[in-house]
Image 1 (tube, rainbow, N blue to C red):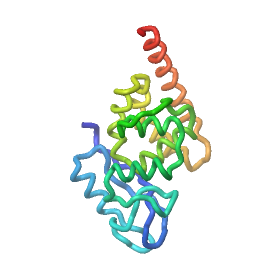
Image 2 (cartoon, helix red, strand yellow; image 1 turned 60 degrees about the vertical axis):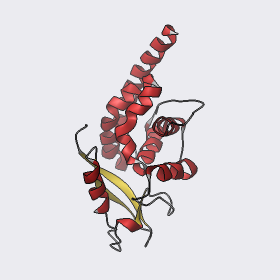
Image 3 (cartoon, rainbow, N blue to C red; image 1 turned 90 degrees about the horizontal axis):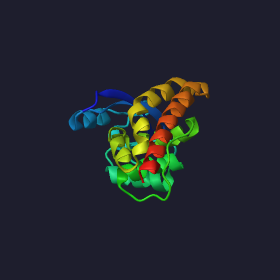
Length: 184
């Protein structure tokens, strides 16, 4: 098991509409993860976790206790999608995909990040993406670094460190893709 981490999770209160960030424990035993979700309350109206949903883009964001499949389906229907976020979705959900790819830049990463805000359990399941597309491995391995850089740089509106880290992973991924083509 990976080391437990505390992650900022974007939430929306269904009672008052407040969008806020809450800390939740990830990569933890399931009971601890659920306890951290149940501890989330709205800072404005103090609504409990049953009235708080993941995401901050729409008031229809799924609630914290909503099953993974329903949250994933909500993202597929309502979330901002790109090829790289769809790759993560299809890899983790076991669905088909016409074209798979990785995030090339911070904007691509942002769409992936939003998916993983709505379905945070998939942060620990990126190996499922790599199992389908082995060239994703450099991204799987560096995902915690990408998240750290995103959290550092997002408030500045620029993400040069994240961009550089994505480019390094891209070079590794392309080397794997090239080797796969030669093996065929």
